[in-house]
Length: 143
Length: 92
Image (cartoon, rainbow over all chains, first blue to last red; front, side, top):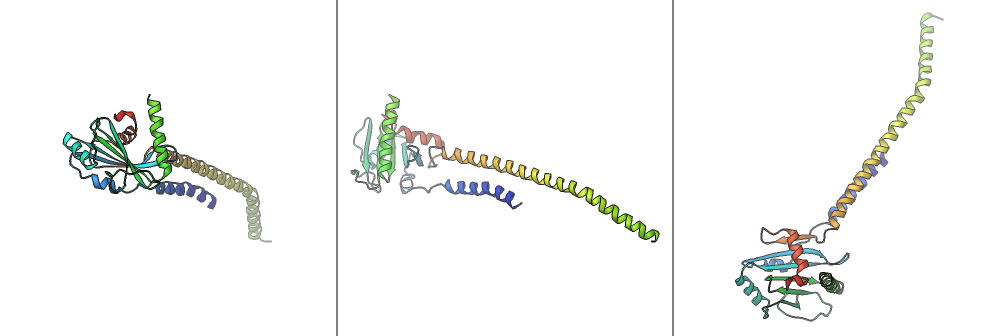
């Protein structure tokens, strides 16, 4: 009888373990910072999978009008008006361009055509490399 | 010996005989019931394990954990797709 009880309890414990593992992370400071922007859709994708073992948190901003896009360009100090603008930024000040020196930073990609900006938070070199690999693989496959 | 004592003795012996005959059969039935219950519990446990593993697998094969959004109208999948698309030529 005790053996049967143990057999029945194991899956329950496994289920509780899974539930604990899939706990959702909290909203990030960047999302909170931009969520109230007028005419702008803002989303935070937590744990965006770059490969089997590496994931990053991404904040996406999408302007709903030309005025909103102009405001976003001013906010992020974007001077170009065609193609894609990309830079590495300070985690606190996304408009500030920085160099990769191993510290946590943001990889920001702004698309003028889609009027959208993606902010990828990179906390480790592993994430940095995985992001570059992801881009290279995608571009190679899309050719 | 009185009739009553002979009757009692017969009754006792009859009962003992019946017990001797019935006990092994009862033991067999009990063992069989236990085996069946054990088998059913094992099958149920395996099924539960499989269900939990499958559920866990569907969670871990997702290419994101969660999505927060300040506007209605766009699904989680669309945001995740945009997060992927932003890293490609599609945004040019």
